[in-house]
Length: 290
Image 1 (cartoon, rainbow, N blue to C red):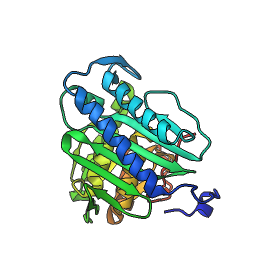
Image 2 (tube, one colour):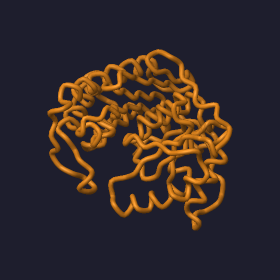
Image 3 (cartoon, rainbow, N blue to C red):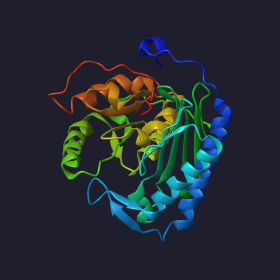
């Protein structure tokens, strides 16, 4: 993990107890998850965003409304950045970065791989990451420096050391032209790894990597609310995490230390025109959006 001096940012000590805020984040994610479960199977798409395959459902909006109501009721001076609604600015220095339903297509199709993603940052990097998967009965929690847990069980990432045998998670964005580029990159990557899995949710895949069910994860085209919580969970489980803004190719890469350099190099080779300089590896240094 980078020090504040290395980042060029001097941060004051958080004015609040991160453990207390983490408990609130757990309650917030659970409440949002219950909103989603109550509507699962009946929720309807209300509009699309970036493309005709990028839906927003009634459930997305209900989940984010629940999150904002709970956070605002307890911590009205915090900033809240969400996927579906405008940013609510605050003055406390704490920022909530939320995806109320990561995996909307899965949710609408009755597939269980979807999650509520809640990260809370003080200054530049998230301090707390909660990924709640109600349909799977899984809840992941990470507090910076205290490790990562699933349902109270401490997580350790994969111990794999051979990239050619690694099972790597990835995904595709909603824009058709971008998906074509991602598919071409994956075709170049697949020969360097063991196999690939796609769940349809970045948060789900990052937690699978944190748990060692995937050996690693990499994807382009992600927004901070897609990965903020899951990246911290992965980092606190011992994975090396390279964030999109740290990598000139815009990839997020999460891998055990033994695979990190080789996977980063394989990812860079997917774009021959890409700058070949090695990016800085930082465990969980997830930047809060402005």
